Length: 272
Length: 69
Image 1 (cartoon, chains in turn orange, yellow):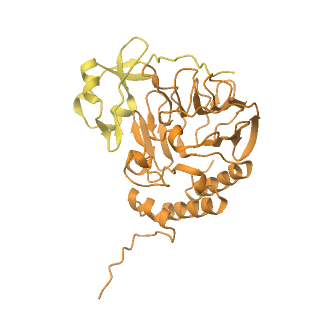
Image 2 (cartoon, helix red, strand yellow):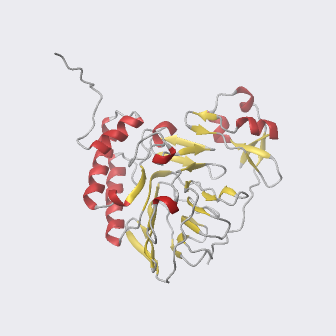
Image 3 (cartoon, helix red, strand yellow):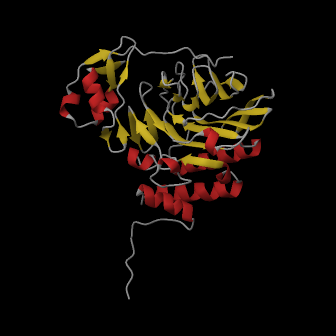
């Protein structure tokens, strides 16, 4: 009996990491190690279980960037991304052009997230104050029920929105003078909505609301305004090198997520 | 910023078409009602007639952000 050994296979002992690497067709040793460590770190710190979708944007092409690390099946139901419009894909991540580029995650908050519990995170290497951007999110209409994050606009502002039907009652804003790094928004109860930068809490909105979870899917690179009129809009020009969607993260989990993601980016030599 | 202008029929023909593997064209309308696609899509695609599309200055449709506090 003989065994055929693939000399380019650098998988790790984690089945989830290996499933992602196989789906994406990635054999590069550095990327494989980075993915393996990211998965094991997130499992150890509890953030893996909080995520429905994790997009590590490795491999340098749309074909490798589209996979969900949590469920690397080639299905909309697995939240595999569909890239639309002017993206530029590279080893540093996926760069939207701020004109017509977005990606559909197919993840619908009303189905995949739970009552008053949700988070969005977006790691960018781009430092820009981009007019009217909403790099990630979904809304029922302009100014309506929304779930989104803004990283940095002119005026050096950011925000996390997880609103009830009146639109702005769930908003938490802060100052953002440098958009680079991991911006995270998290709702963990009817009276706790927080925005974080690189794991550090920036601001809290403690007013009591009931988050109205949207019934359409979350976009990356723009917001999905699902009113059959506006569509994708508020496009961003911020390169995405990691993104996640899931239930709410505590302060400690937001910090732990940043630590794991920054180590991941450092292994790939693309940290900011 | 420059974008490529195309006719309605040309725009419709690109919907659902990949300009690179696993990345689809996204023809949109600008503020003047022109159908346009981005320079990134044209530069990365290998469709000859798309590469010949003329350039115009982009005028975005920017709705008000009604979620502002």
